[in-house]
Length: 310
Image (cartoon, rainbow, N blue to C red; front, side):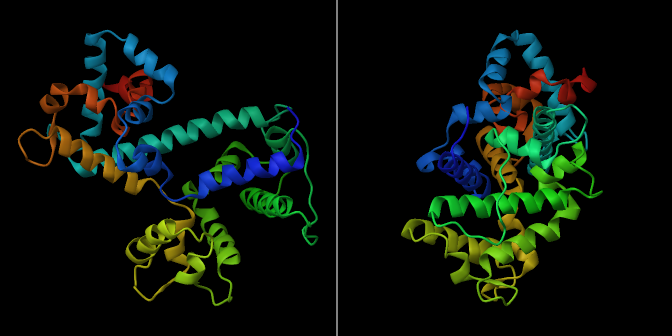
């Protein structure tokens, strides 16, 4: 399908809003404040096909693989899973599948199979054509101008990820482009990018007013103001310095992982010792298999997670 400029603009705007929105996973997980067990299972197993495969496993094989995963989560081999161990495992799982997805995307974007992805190949995969905007010429149409700015930002990030200045991105550089939060050499770039967008008075910081400028919805402002004060502004000076900006512009999964670990312990800890034994997990395995701890059961079908213990 060939995208017109307006369709492409709207599509990219939606994609960027989804990618940049802090707490997107929480919103999926807790629509209107309610936990979705189907989301839990999808996150553990992944896509619906993986859920179906999990259901096909016999009870004995399910339990065998689940026990193997429990042993790998238990880093100190004391027979219990703590909040820290569960959180670390969930974060590792997130990163593993993000990297797997990036590797799959790399193959799709590499149109001529030369083990590099050029900027033209990226455009063709994303928009079915090569798009080129003049950096110094604004467009009259508001939607198209928004798209132009986002497209130019993507191009700058692509160029920054290209460490060797070659004709395209290697797999490692493509991962840096898709997941700058996972690569140290991209940190300074994403911080500077955020300052260019949000630091309107050019003082090198993002004030609360600048932080809230993107949206006028009263409910959104209340939520984001609370995040600014309690999550991001660590020194309580009313503004975000470059290091405080980082968890906002490149959110990691640490908070989501900790929340899920606490939820599992709260739901499955039968004796109140604030940790989970294998017996407690096997008492209610379906709950464990509808959480990020097993990527919603997906790990039972990925020998990267369970094979070494079998």
